[in-house]
Length: 223
Image (cartoon, rainbow, N blue to C red; front, side, top):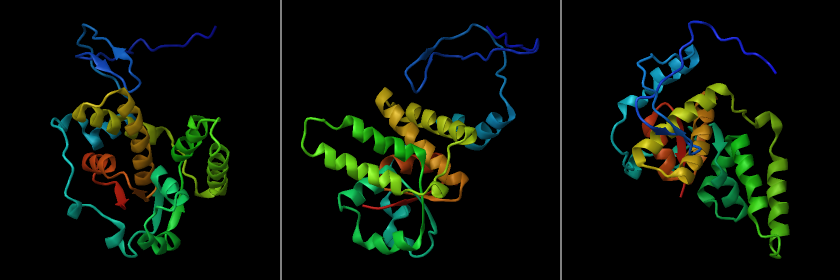
């Protein structure tokens, strides 16, 4: 058994109301006025994102206020693909007007989208004839992604994604399954922001909301 030394100045953080985590765990109220102690990186993320400033549900912005591939021109040079991009390319549904942009821009990838694609292989019914072919397509897509173009999710990205997804879940009243989904979106959004990429996605609603919470992140939408 390992003993973990705890400084005598340590104070356990307390919550002023019952809070449910993204994974569905209930955090109980502790009857104490002890101040919350946070490390400097976490404090910095909270100061930048200011979750306490957001009090009312978000509303979708008009499409005229969003960046779509039709109006992007040559301004976007680094794209971090959302899972929707891989799916639409596999199903020949990606808009033709975006082909030139895909060829011109740098394509970047995330372990988050790899996990979502890999989950497809487990979700497919093995009794169906199409499953083997679809699985082979997914494997081919994942294996073609170059490792030097894959952006890892470090602790800074996880912190920011947690704050963003928690704020969004609170504002929009998301249930547990929606909270898990938007955490993945927030991880992708925070990864793109840190590395100077634009997220390329068909998921207009969730990434519009994330960009409203953090306007410094860039997103390029397509229909």
